Image (cartoon, rainbow, N blue to C red; front, top):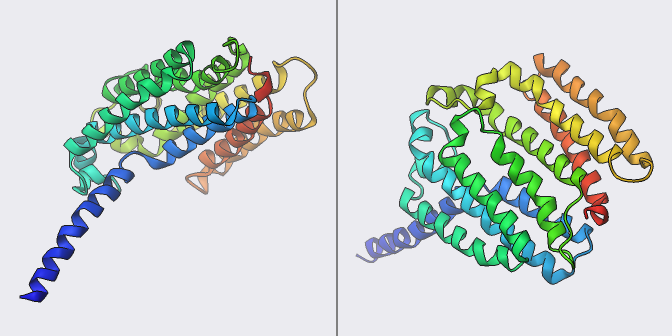
Length: 289
């Protein structure tokens, strides 16, 4: 009897833990951490105080959590249909209703946190979050699938700049570079799943281009972002900037050339260029406005 009771107790304890882990995994933790860290680092590089940096980080975190949970809850049936592994809702690790509830709770929390950064900064951030929700619910299956990424990544420098004292408008080159990186992020994010997505009827921009077309296009916005970040700000390019600009197309082309031997070579090349671009953006943080 005691063994049975212990077993039941273990089962009762294990279920909430499994649900919590499933909920954490279903938020797309990689992109959540990456985007939140980028926004916070950009705020620090722009010279904002610790409290303001933390506030921007919290607002972006809430927004990203809402977007990630919305994505997994909405795509649960599609993920199950193609047998996509590692999806907690489709795998039954957490219920769809629980993930939807978490998504809406994070979205509601995002509103006051965003507006606390300032009215204009908050409105820009909320517009980016709404665009990401529209991507999940509709636009990812259309030729405009790239647009929410442009709004989201292009909006990050704007949110930081508008949070500065006096709420200055962001430099055009920072927004442009962010938007170009957003296009690259969209292409790179969808590329591995194009085959499965087509089986479920998705027809976003990468699906229309196909695997080869997407792989060939992927380096273009990254190299363009590098050129904008190096050449557009006032003053001569730094040695690091000039070296990055020279290396970006070579790295991207090397990734494409090695693609026949390693399936992820093109993506690896673009990630390397993206990392250099993000470093340039952070270095230019004090000139965002």
